[in-house]
Length: 254
Image (cartoon, rainbow, N blue to C red; front, side, top):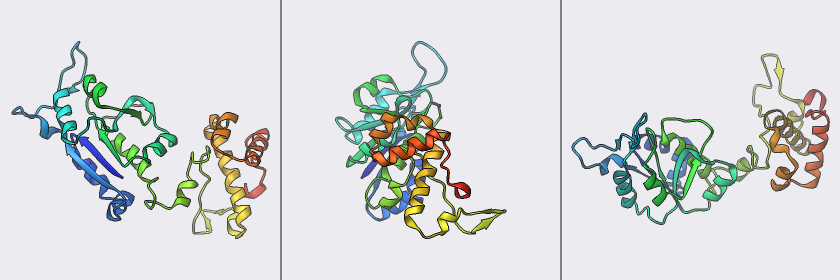
């Protein structure tokens, strides 16, 4: 998978791909990236990439001619071009899974008040929001999307890790514990020390349901559970937990 990112601040992109999972993915040849400096396509003496909006108002808008030239430099016409924006479609696990099927993704990162609408209408195929809030950096939003997509590329992380993460089964992830066995007077739940894999899996599933009920109860609507591919047995277990007020009834290990 290759990620091409058009940005006014390409150093942000370079720093991301120099660290952790992204860096290892690049080293393994599973990931590739290209950071393109939009400012290099501004030809006036000040290398201006933005101007005041028509109709008045606060802020500045990125110029269509500069952004379009940057897009043409990477053959952006007819490709899948993603514009991170708070007014886009909400990012989800399903969208990340769909994007992970592509061989290459092209991101154009906005700043200030955004990018001239004419460029968005002509080139952008996906406008995606990472949440109902506004941040100054389109680069940070792009890297959130990239981080979620790259994890789905085979070999970047283990398949087992991906399957157990939040939202993969329509539920939030269960809690995790590590050494020491007792810390600050609190012990690791006994079931996790038992070595009984079936009981551990049952405990983890129930804890996922309990947390989802407490934090994101809308995820437990019947239609969503069916769409998540949960078995009839798992859905029955969920209904029992909900009937008990969201508690799993596992006693001290619960």
